[in-house]
Image 1 (cartoon, one colour):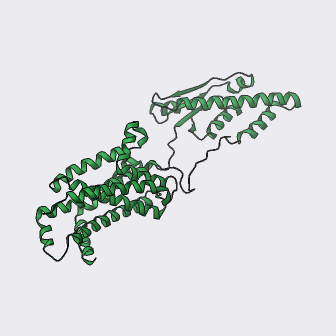
Image 2 (image 1 turned 135 degrees about the vertical axis):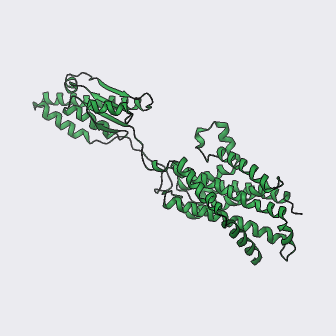
Image 3 (image 1 turned 60 degrees about the horizontal axis):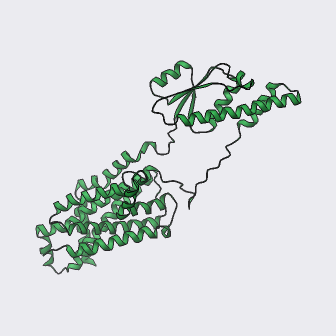
Length: 385
């Protein structure tokens, strides 16, 4: 064990002595997460911005505005006509709603008032805004009809009854309750930032492992392997030392990236024990893939070229760069045959659904099957004589 530990320590020291290693292992994953994960949009709802031009300025026109605001689906700002036009032309708002003079009078006369909604051609939420406005007008019309009937029955002033009904109904919450099904109350959905953070961490760990396993080919090319074999160290101890160094390097990279994204980007990775098991299985699979590729090439340069091509293409297929849901069905099915897919499945279960180690048994088993296949073929094909 001492010899295995010494070899592992030497390889780790050699790896971290290179300044470019830190850029590849830590700088690039964080940069890609920043670009593809939408760092600054994390936690923001990105609601469309709509201006309201109230030319009627009456109780019912204000009631309509308050009713639409209460939906919480858009950000409404009260502007005059000139300001709204200026913002619209400068594309600072998605559109504007104009309530014409006589809005309240038409409602009191049991007429449907005309509301003008002007939107940008690129605004996809126009139909939603129209529906919200129509629903709100219907609700106000019901209130007005009720107040008119109540006024006739009781003889109270219409204005008083109307104000009372508006006051009573304005605070009524929506009748639809949104329930998020999750195993933990800590997180409900896996944000784009979390998904991309997990995905790019996997990708750059795989690239780093590819470089690390290429050391075996470099040792054969440079004759280092033969010189080490002349010492009292056995081949098993040499391989054990190298594999241990690969595993520890991968864990250092994965662990630091997870810690940074948790502290700085507020990414919640979920259950600690389950993450340790999942990351360990993923690293073993990645090491196996590196040895598998090394078994089919003749030099470390060839391994770098073909290995990066394989890793990047399978990362695209496995959902690292974008959600799998946007891909065609046949590609979603093909993604099941790459380890990145199962790694992301495990992280999704832990980070988005609050799962534990029992909930990721299936992804872990699949990753271990990949590991067994890669290591078996890779170890058989690598030759050092």
